[in-house]
Each structure stands twice: as C-alpha cells, then as structure tokens.
Length: 155
Image (tube, rainbow, N blue to C red; front, side):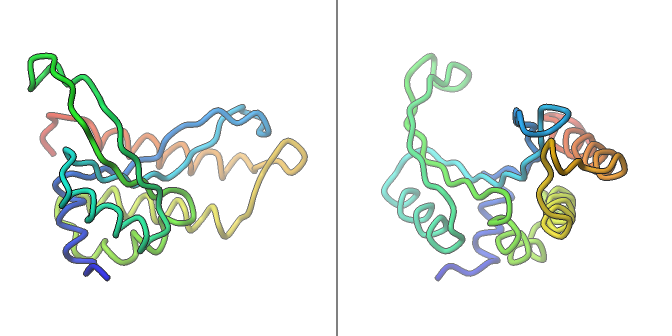
C-alpha cells in the first residue's frame, strides 16, 4: 500500500483535479458535472507499476495510450500511462491526499466539497429534478475549478 503523502507528491507534480462537464440526456440541462482525478506519466515500468498500484488502492481506472506530442518531441509519438479516479470513488482518494497537497490543495477541496454534496443529495434526472440552488452551487464550483486549472496563470 502506497502512502498518501507519496501519492500527493505525484498528484502535485503530474496530476490534475477537475470538474468535467459531460453530456447527460437524463437531466433537464442535458449535462452534468463529474469529479476527475488523474495522474499521467510517460510510460516506463516504474510508472506503470506505480499507477497500477494507485488504481488498485483507490478503485480507479488504469490506461495506456500513445499521443503525438508536438510541443516537446518534434512530432514523435509518446507512450503515456494514466490513472483516473472519478465520481464517488474520488472521495476517499481526495480525503487521503488533501492534507499533503501543496499546489493542488484548493482544487482538491472544491472537488471534495462538490462530490460530498452530490452524494448526500442523491441522483437527479428528468423525473427527479435538481433544485436551482444545487445547479448554481455546481456551476460556481465548476467556474472556480476552471480558474484554478488555467495554465500559465499566476495566483
């Protein structure tokens, strides 16, 4: 089992915490928000082992894919491995690592607050409508997360 402080270091360096907008035909607004925590690294056996262990420890999903990274490698293909922990599964992950985060602590707190509120309220669909106040809170969290996750912005 990996220590949360160790995982938090990877999250601060190579990870992302976001609220993503996904199409959802069962809601009135036709979209919903999802908490996503991801750590991605260039493929190596060490990175593969580490990310698979994190995925197993927190019930996440492990992926490998190839991407064309034109910015740093002059158009050469780059093999990436990634772990994604989303929705309710992200609660325990965020609760464990948040005390150790330095750079992404605000994003973790917003994501945790959002997911705990969502799990407490329950599931909404076109037959069980989400209150206007809940949409406003979710939208405010989404906008705040967008601001915090902008690249090359000094805070």
